[in-house]
Length: 199
Image 1: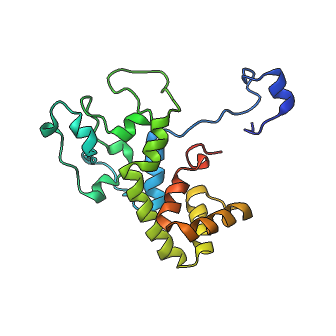
Image 2: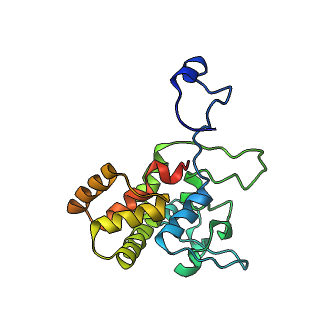
């Protein structure tokens, strides 16, 4: 099935109860985090072993009832392992994972809840993890595409979206790069709907 709109079907079944199209579904938080790491070039593919200890933002530590008992973060290379290796502790869930609908670790559920709320967009645009990975993505683009902005944009789209940019997208980003840094463009690409709502 397609995700494309069909006005005739939409008029008859606006809520898609008859499943005439595939509904848009956001990636799980694990897939979003792993995709960001893969695109930035920082994904550590190491398998097995103990859990890795992700960095907890200072604001989250301030809200903790016992911040001294929160773990010391693993080395950055270890933190770049797949999200399945993140230590999950009920008393301190990593904020990015929690905001993006990590499953409830205290009880079983037949289906994971998927929400769309403002803190998710803020986390993916302003969060420390995404900004750090945007920096690495920008460095990767310079290393792989050189200093030519058009080649950087082409490479960024191939890595993040598995397709070339359209002419309109290329023109918009060329203009964007005249005013903003490559790192900011990388952050924008991580926040495209197409990145977290794949076809």
